Each structure stands twice: as structure tokens, then as C-alpha cells.
Amino acid sequence: MMFRNLYISLLCTLLLGCAGAPEFDTSGVDRALTPQSVIAEPDLSRGKVALWGGTILETRNLKDTTQIEVLAYPLDISNRPMLDSKPLGRFIVRHPGYLEPTTYAQGRNLTVLGVVSGSQSGSVGETSYTYPLISDSQLHLWSQHEGSRTSVHFGLGVGIGL
Amino acid sequence: MKLTRAVVHSGAVALMLSITACSTNIPIEISQPLEGSPGVGEVRNHADAFRSTRVRWGGVILGTENGQDTSRVTVVAFPLDGDGEPRVSDQSTGRFIAVVDEFLEPLVYSRDREITFTGRVLNTETQDVGEFAYEYPVIQVEQYYLWPEKVEPVYVDYPPYWWYDPWYPYYPYFPHHHRH
Image (tube, rainbow over the protein chains, first blue to last red):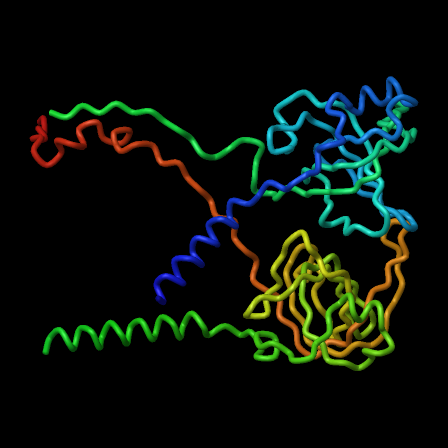
């Protein structure tokens, strides 16, 4: 009986260990939407639901919102940004209230589900840049230790017995 | 008889090892849970109600400022584990400021180090984080413990054995000729 409990708790731990990928409600998501396409057609894009992800460039705490500037990458099957791919442009997540900037730190990767709410102009160096704005309804920060590649390798081996 | 003695000996060795492992200088107030200690968020929202309440809080240091007779440590708080050590994650419980009545070397009590305090709630203080007016609970510190820096594990991919010695599998049987 004791062993059975132990076994069950061990199993639960193992299962929890694998439950890394978050659930996003992707029903209304326009998969064709990218930061670049939003900038190209701002009026058509406003109000559409986007699922974007990438690497945090900067987190700014404003009076009653937090703005996270992100460099977007295409998402993989579990909606994690693929950092080996070509970036899709920058965007800004506008989150109501305070987010801890040392947690939402530069270099962390996130995926956001939200509504395209407009654009904001800024600059990268001396180049003026238009950032699409997205109001998040779900924000997922990826763990620092999980890369974009799986660490499990499958191999096929041939053995010869003599 | 011999076997029993061996068992006793190994037991004694194990005991000594475990005693050595435990003999750190963590103050008991730090390593033991403090009953009734409110959370950082609770104190931020109801500062007056918690004035002078004893707390046991810990987290990651953002910075240490040295005043005339005091040091002020700004901390991003996290829940504490069974030993009172902060369990750092993406779910911070908020920021706080700890006032210590002595000089703390800012190069040691530096950004990203983990620390745990016990103390009493003094008040709250508003400081800007970016443009956000953040209300920091301030505590007067009684005990504190700076956790040792964690050494990042280094994983080395050793080359296969034949990299070192191509004769390895034959080694015991392979005669080595010394030319002279």
C-alpha cells in the first residue's frame, strides 16, 4: 500500500515534469498575422487575435501598464518561439498593471495571445520604427532552461553478435 | 562479530558526515518557519495593519545602499523553502526593502545574491520602478542570512575511452615493448 502511494506520487512528479507547454486558446487566432504584416496593413489588422512569441528586448514599467518589447520569431508546434528561424520583426505587449522587470528580463522568451490594438512609433538606434501593439490576454514566459530544440534524441542502432 | 563492528563503524561515519553537512551557520530564526508571518503582498496592501508584525522574508537582492549607520537592501521576494531559502521562480511575491543596522558590504550583498531576513514591518515607501510608483514594504531586520552562491554545474562531454588509448580493450594482455 505504501509502495503504491509512493509509485503514484512518483508518477505524478514525472508527469508534472513534462507538463511544460501551456494551453493557448487558439480558436480565434489569425495565424497569418505577423508584426510585419500588421505594420503593412494596420487598419485591417486592428482587433485581430494574434499568437506571437519571441525574445524580450526590454521591459518598461509605465504608470499603470507594463510594456514588453519583443523580437518575434515563428512558433513551433507547442507555440514556443523558434530562435533559429528568421525574426519576424519587433512588437510591444501592453499589459495592464505591474510586471516584475527582473522576471520579464531581457533575453527571456515568451509567447503571448492577444488582440492587435494599434501601433506605436519608436526608434531602433536612429532608425524610426513602428511597433505593432498587442494587448495580452495570456502571457507565457518560457523556462530559462528549455531551449527551442528538444533534448531527446532517437537513434537506430545495429548490433552484431559474434 | 566483525560484521556488526563494520556496521557500527559505517553508521558512525554516516552520522559524522550528516552532522558535518548540517553544521552551517544559518540562524535558527532563518531556517525555521515563523508562524503568522504575513506575505509581502499582504503587507503592501495593508501596511498599517501589519506595522511591527514579525516577518520572515527572502529573495534575490536588487541592490544594497549604505547609509550613515544602516544598510538598505532591496529585494525581489520569493516563497521560502523548508530551510528558509528563497525558491526563485517566475512567480515573485513582490519587492521589499530591508533595513539593517550595520554596514553590509555592497560588493558582497550584491545584485542576484539570495538572502533571507527576519524582522519587523516598519512602514511602506514609494519608489519608482521605471514610471510605476511601487510601494515597497520596509522591514527593520533582526536576523539575516546570505545564501552561498550556487555554482553552476559544468557538464563535460568526455571523449570515448579509445580517444585516450587505442589499445584499451587489449590493455592487460598487450605486451609493452621497451626499446632500448
